[in-house]
Amino acid sequence: MSKSLEEIQAEIAAQNAAAPVAEAAPKLSVPELLAALAAATNIAPDVLATALDRAAPDTPELLPEGAKVFYTSFPNCGIMVQRGPASCERIEFKGTRLVTTDPQVIEYLLAIADKPGSTVYTKSNQHISDEVQEVRRDLMADANRAHSRMVAAGERVA
Image (cartoon, rainbow, N blue to C red; front, side):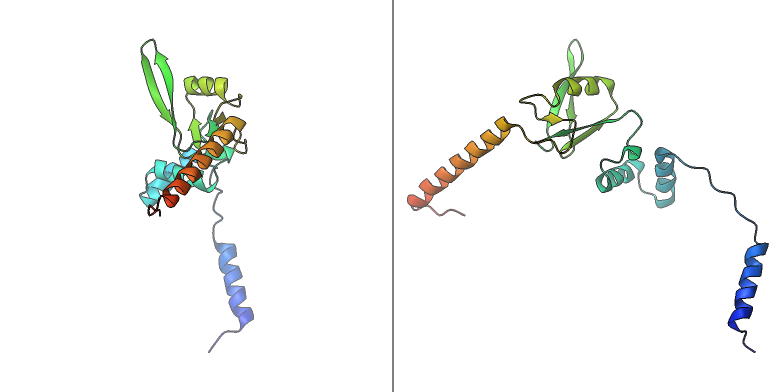
């Protein structure tokens, strides 16, 4: 004998009412959540953090505490930061961004960021400086002239 829809719904409601109510899980910080996710998926926490950063690059809660984000108009470039009287360290941008919590790096980059002629910015929508745009225009013009000369000389150009 089959049950009616009302009987099935009444059974489900009774089961739900009898089931113990689970306590709400405590809120996790982003690093704790990444560690738990890494343990559950066998994916390294830094790989997960990189994926989250690419998905939502300017989401402050995904950044480590005290982190500062800098941007450059030259992807994957590096800067040298003096660490001591005779020691420097190369710090590299990943793509056009650098996220750092290092106070020496932050201090150095804040000193040069957003200045005329600088290619380091504190805002992602910062326009490339006029000098950089002028250099790019000059390089393109030189490349076009060289291409035209090669074609005129009868060379095969891809």
